[in-house]
Image (tube, rainbow, N blue to C red; front, side, top):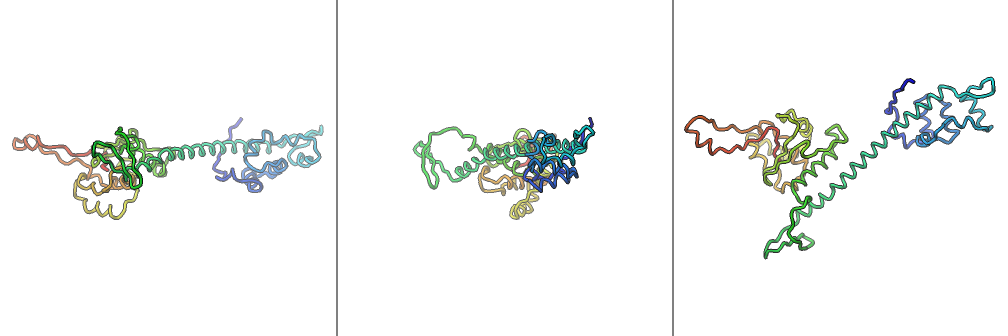
Length: 316
């Protein structure tokens, strides 16, 4: 039997909310058959869910009831032995509608599941915001060998413990990047895409003022990096742009401190990434190493410290 291509985009996105005449209009649009509409109306099938839950649309034509005699004549062919045969075109259209609606229902179920997963993921990241606000307003009193934490509204004491995941600046940055990529999936043309540390990029923290995001796309040139090209579309404010213009002839290390006076884990990700990506490639290239081989340069070479950065590595 020939397999018919089922093209669900011909159905409106709100097909599952249509009923009665709006639903029947879609039936006419897809099949062009008023007979099918009459068949559905006679059974009270007025929406896509009722259609899919009715196993045999034509069963009504077998009922021994005077009410449906006229419907039998319009939907069937009466044979010489006084029996009726359903018109083949109607059967074909019903089969096509069932395949079309079934596939649309499967796509709709996947879409709902994906939205629920995104919502759950966002809820799982939401406590980070609370932790950040607490971290930004908290102070630590180490006098008298005690560990007391105070906020503008509360005072409480706690034993000295190791840094938790929610207070770890690196984990906060990673979680914020994940949350940002979920909320801005349109940049990546993939609704399932989530920026993952260790998979799409490496986060390198030497100290709170020396932090890098290094892309793992295997491109040596930032101009060719797919992720960087997408993120260059982000906007930065006028103050940041003015600072970039003023510092255009300075090294990467010298010009990056203007990002923010706040601690790194309190900086908005969009600001951090946007400013970093707007730095042109020439600022990310390694500075020239001192020439070797000349005797009078030996001491200079010994004292030289390589502060260059890989062209794939973006300082934030």
